[in-house]
Image (cartoon, rainbow, N blue to C red; front, side, top):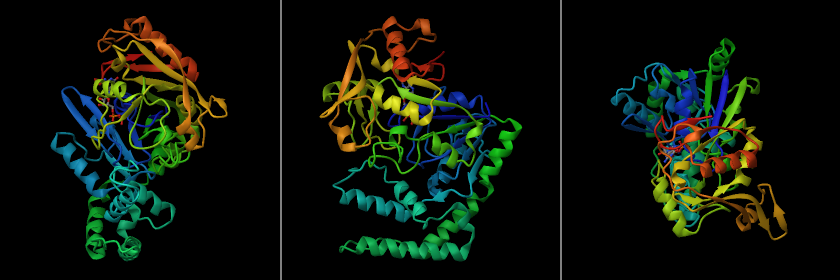
Length: 426
Ligand code: GDP
C-alpha cells in the first residue's frame, strides 16, 4: 500500500481510533488531514486508555511518524499540551510529529465567536459544536483572514493580522450592544510568536515530505476525523463540520494526489449514533436508545455528551460508499447489539412524495423521512470473545452479510470490543 485512507462512514464516533491504531502497524506515516482538536480518538493499549484529539494515534507505536496536514486547524496550546501529556506517560515524541507549515491556527477569538453564535442560536450546544473554535477558524481560512503556522514567523504580518482580526471580532460582537470581548492583540501576538518558536522543530513542507516518501514506496495511512455524513459538502448541511471529512479531503488536506490511494476503508458502527442537532431518520425511541447508549457507552470522548442512538442506516452507508469510493468496511461495536430480539436496518426512506433509496440533499426532507426497515433476528450470546467469523452466532453473521449486500461493499473487519485483539479479520 503506498497510501490508504481510513475514515468514518457515519456521523463520527464510529470507533475509527481502534482501526487507525491497528492499520498503523502497516504504515510508517499516519496523517491527519482535516478537523482539529474536536476529534477524540480513544485507543486502548493493554491496561492504558489514551484519548487523542489532534496528534495521530499512530504516535502510540514506536518509530511511526504522526503528521498534521495543511487541512487540519491547529490550536497550538492544546497541541503542545497533548504532546506534553504523551511525553509524561512515557511516549517518546521526539522527531515523530510533523506539522504542515500551511495548516491554519486557532486563536482565542475563534472560540469567542463560536460561543457567541451558539448562544445566539438558542442556548448551550444548540448547533452541537465543541466550542473549540474550529468552525470560525475554517471560516477565516475561506475568507482569507486566517493565520497559518508559517505566518507565526513573520512578525510584522502576524501583528497586523491579529490586530485587524481582533478589531473586526470586537466590532462584530458589540454591534448589537453585546459585551466587548476580552482580547488583547499585543498579548496574543506575544503568545502566538512563542507558540511558533515551540512548534518550529516540528514544522515541515508536508506535501514534499509525503510525496518523497510515497515515491520510495513508504506506506502512509491517512486518518479521517468526524465522519462522512458530517462532511461540509456531502453531509447533512448545515448540521455538519466545517471541513472535508470524506476521502476527497484526504487529498486536499495532505497535499498528495489521487494516484497514490490504493484503499479507502470506511468504519461504521453496527448501528448509528449522532451527536448534537440535525436529522437522524433511524433514531430510536428514547427507551431503546437509552439501553443502547448504556450498553455501548455512547458518550462523547471529547465532550462527554450523550450520543443520540438509532438503527443502522443503509441509505446513509450507501451514500458514504459512493462518495468516498469505499473499498472495504470495518464494522464496529456489533457486540453492543447482543441481547436485542430484533435488529432493524433501513434500506430506503418513505417521503411525502414516495419512496427514495438515496440520501436527499434537502435537510428538511431528510428530517421528515420515515425509514423503511427490514427486520433481522438478533442474538443473545456475548460476542466479545469471538475472534473468527465462525465464532459469531449465525444471526450476527447474517446481519453482517446483509450490511455487505446493501452497501455492495465487502467487510474487511468486524470489531467485537474495544481491545486491539477483539477484532475479526476477514
Ligand atoms: P472514533 O472517534 O471514531 O475513534 O470513536 P471513539 O473513540 O469516540 O469511540 C469509540 C469508542 O468505542 C471507544 O471507547 C472505543 O474503545 C470503543 N470501541 C471501539 N470498537 C468497539 C467495539 O467493537 N465494541 C465496543 N464495545 N467498543 C468499541
